[in-house]
Image 1 (cartoon, helix red, strand yellow):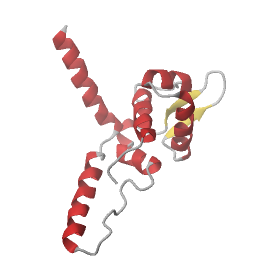
Image 2: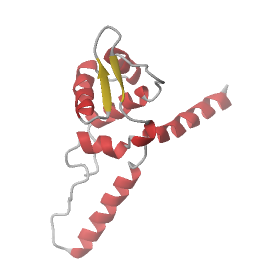
Image 3: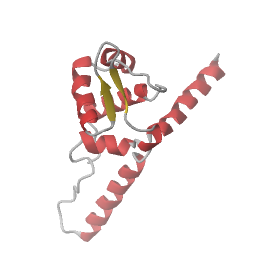
Image 4: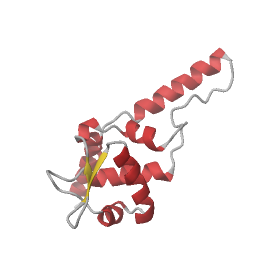
Length: 137
């Protein structure tokens, strides 16, 4: 329930890069892979899954690439995890003990709440990085 695979971590890194696009811009997969520091072959599989789930749009052709299918505020990290991690929020309590059921239920809710942020909220972290860099210079 709690662990995330490299697949999801790479997906979030790629979506963060795509979140910087404006208007009709698209990014080629090699540019996303380079900017997000993700292996291109692995990224192709990830982006295909996200496209199938209508999180991304792919444009074919010489000027094609990927872009987000929705507004930043409409894409939750939780949704990405649900697509890529089949049992991320599954019920891990394997007992009938009511105390443990409550405990694991609270853990599950807490984890879900942590990832219930939109891609637009990642911009807050970017601002913190920018503030740190501006302060240091």
